[in-house]
Amino acid sequence: MFAYITRRLIQGVVVLLAVSFICFIIFMYSGDPVISLAGRYATLQEREEVRKAFGLDKPFYVQYVRFIANAAQGNFGKSYVSRVPALGLIMERFPATAELAVSAIFLAFTMGVGLGVLVSLKPYAFRNRLIMTGSLVNISMPTFLMGILLIMIFAVYLGILPPFGRGETVDLGFWRTGFLSWSGIKHLILPAFTLGMYQLAVLLRLTRAGMREVLTEEYIKTAWSKGLPPRKVIFKHALRNVMIPVVTMTGLQFGELIAFSIVTETIFQWPGMGNLLLTSIYEGDQPVIVTYIMLTALIILSLNIIVDILYAFLNPKIRYE
Amino acid sequence: MNRRFFKSKIVHDYFHDPSAIVGSFLLVIFIVGTAFAPWIAPQNPYDLEKVSLEHFLTPPIWMEEGKAPFLLGTDDQGRGIFSTILYGCRTSLIVGFGVVLIAGTFGVTMGLLAGYYGGTFDSVTMRLADIFFSFSTTLMAFLLLGLFKQRGVLIVILAICIADWVRYARTMRGSVLQVKEEAYILAAKATGAGDFRLLIRHLLPNAIPPIFVVMAVDMAVVIMLEATLSFLGVGVPLTEPSLGMMISIGKDYVYAGMWWLVVFPGAALFFLVIGINLFADWLREELNPKIERRE
Figure 1: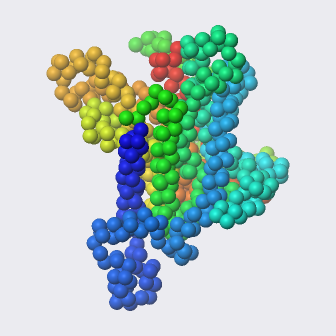
Figure 2 (figure 1 turned 60 degrees about the vertical axis):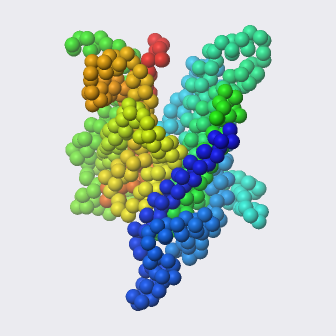
Figure 3 (figure 1 turned 90 degrees about the vertical axis):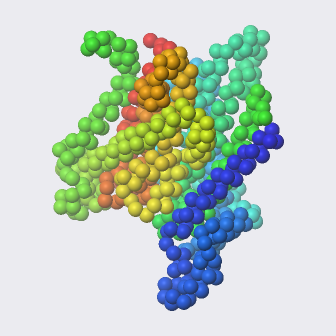
């Protein structure tokens, strides 16, 4: 197990290096940073001085090593637009995105697995066919459309939920949370639902398919004939075996979740990282874009490793040698 | 031949599956509608001479202030919603087919080679596929387009292809690994068939059926992705019609009660995607030997 984790960590570092290399190349070839650093009206001599001062006259590999060394210390340079460190700018937005994503995953996971189990027990019941049709509708509707329709219904016509913003937040010193105020919770409902919907349908379908397969197995028949209560047969014997692909899928879909959080944040004007990224793309703010990419890569890779380790706990058959 | 075709299992199953019929019916409507868009559409919304600002934000024709020929109303530039939808679906379908064909061909080739030769090429390709997968097609296409400065339909197709080919490579490789073990492959080898012949004549046709399902599902995903990218403003340029962009323009008017700017393009996108998904569902069951169909 230890050897396995070590190997995965090394692989993760290699991928991060590859991502950083791509980012670096983009950095190098998307305009000369000297011009933005020295100012448009600097003389040639002043430009040369700036070039020397920032080490931009050094060969390619020296600069790359410096870029990596700085990145490892969390220094990705300053935003071209707001002139503050890019990492700080993103980290300030991190709590908003994290709270949105966690709420969405929670919604998707509990509802997806719950409904999936429900549907699998009586697949041809009318109510369950309705749920399945709903999930097909759900899968065929892009996140942004879902978000706008929800705004139209709940904010514009019914007027019961706020259409944008994060509401009142409580500052905990290191973390600005919206969970602790009523207005914060109300603002969270529509975006979290929008973001969770896509995953919900995927998890529902996966749980249903898995449960239908498992419920026909011999050991489930044994469990029933032993006279175990349905609760135990369904949740302990059957669902436990279905959870492996479901957890994997939740982990694998994390990249998708981040992508759709950009969409959701744009629609609901949620003050998170995704919203910042989109603004930075419009403004051509390279340092912020690169920092965002590196940070997302780091989060996704760590999550993948955690999911793989979780595997081992869910399925005792898997032993990483 | 003809009679045998009409009596075959696949044709029989098709006509006994309502979702397959509804799905392909929707698809045919969209394909015909977009192919003949210049003749069906009352105006060409991207011909500046035909578009006039005086008709801007007209409601659909059955509402009080509706005007002919704007069947479903107009947007803020005076473009007819119905006509723009026809042209927008054209972009959707071009991107959809384009990506499925290009990414599909490339992915299938890579998967075929990786599965057949194994070794370092295989492990590198598959590691790459793992990484691409964990970043997700949507995120990767979005970031690529965010870094590109140019905009255009071809660039959107290219960016999605770069992010998407691994889906095909993975499926193809898995399929090849299974087929490789079959007796007829060994027999072909024993008769002295070379690598090329083995790959093209024996492995490719026998390993490809699962790819058709992936293509159908992927088509729906790609069309939604193009709409999402255009909605975010990194997709097709403003001068090209796109459902995603229409919705993006319309969302600002939702608060003013002008629902037709969002609802109609949204419905078009939804029916296009659900048509493909219904068809894909049928194809998946049809091509999966493990599922015995219940009639």
